[in-house]
Amino acid sequence: MKQLDLAIVIPTLNEEHYIGRLLDSIAKQTVKPKEIVVVDAFSKDLTGEEVQKRMKKLKNLKLFRLPKHTISKQRNFGANNTSAKHILFLDADGQLKDPDTLKKYMDEVERRKPDIAAALNHPLSDYWKDRVFFKGMNLIFRAIKPFWPMATGMNLYIRRDVFEKVKGFDEMVRVGEDIELVQRVVKKGGRFLFLKYPKIYTSVRRLEEEGRRKFAKKMFKAFFKVIRHGHQKNDVEYEFGKFGKE
Image (cartoon, rainbow, N blue to C red; front, side, top):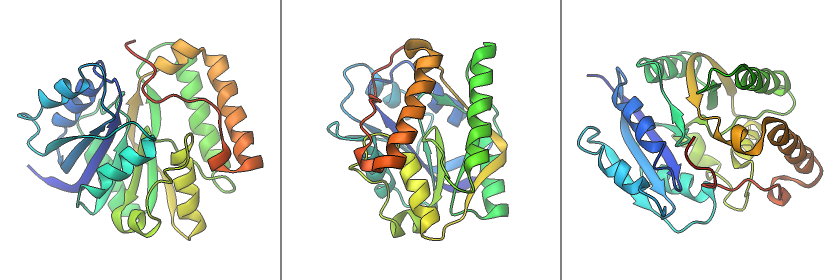
């Protein structure tokens, strides 16, 4: 089976109900990544055990543990402990439902040659409000791309040499570190693209537990705080590892 020159990096904190589903969906891909790294912030649940149970199936899967600091630190640590030419950051509550997701992702990367990129995100939900929310989010991200490029860590691709050149994620940014990285790469002349063909699916747990309207208001509040004060001073609460089982 063809192996992609790709490292997948997944930060976790209390993700026992999700990480196994993501890893199982990676195991079912028609092409496999060179490396899969989970960087756990000493979860208090069975996240580590769920990862370890899948190591026989995924021979290139590694688990590291770091004290909780910022998600940026976990992502940087994971990337720095891999060697593949391409890096894909995924959130633990996502899934690759189509067995050809990674093939489509990397085929488009190879063809269009971005420095940093993201696929469009879709909800792991059939509820119409969730579909509308994600569709609206995708439309907004594409519409503002020319003057405010942004993507989320639900899925974020970057070429390793670009990642190293910009020194990875800013570990002082508590919220919106993914957006900050995209904007820093673009500011330095990097090419940022939204990919057309792969679909990444993600949990709607935050929408359900916070409320869709409240969550949307929080995101707009964070957006305007960043515009006024910069990414490092964005103090809108977004607690990594807070939300549990759906």
